[in-house]
Image (cartoon, rainbow, N blue to C red; front, side, top):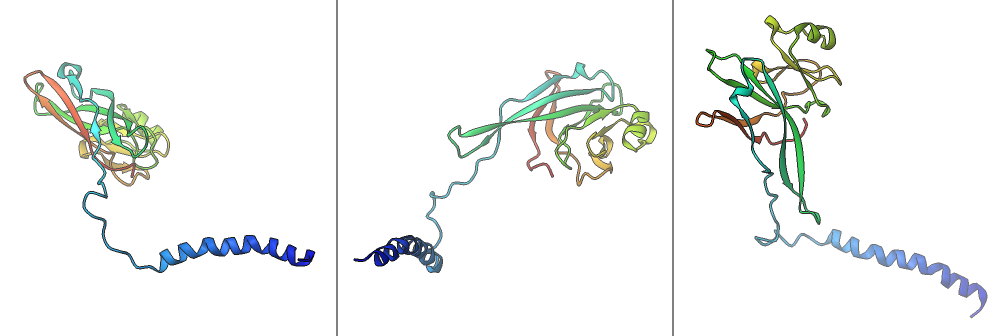
Length: 195
């Protein structure tokens, strides 16, 4: 074998190898799907599970417009070595005016802004809301306001966006008032992502 033939042979090996490697994906693409997977082979993702309930004594809310911050933890299934990921979701529990002094009404929301995921604040002062967030609340009602892009949410209207670019209200938490132990029990968060 002369030098020229040998060099042609050596230089054609990568080309021949690439051709062989492309045959298998081509046949897999052309072969029709065999059908659905048998039952049990495909696992459905599990729902997130709360790590623990968040509880507050009702005495922590002596009058309307008192707010308490908390961090809700839930375990999300994950197909990794760890098997799960703990999500920490900051939230606000706010007592709103009821019919009487002993009438406890609450709204409980995630503090994650649905616009870009910033953490919003509780703004009880209407002057601060007007100057800092370009929105004056009606009758001095406190609001939730995001400092990143100035979204404002009204707690008396189910978290409705009253100003700014947020596409929807923040995620809400499920809760109940346990009359026996006089506590507010926060048990679950609305499913979904930021927006």
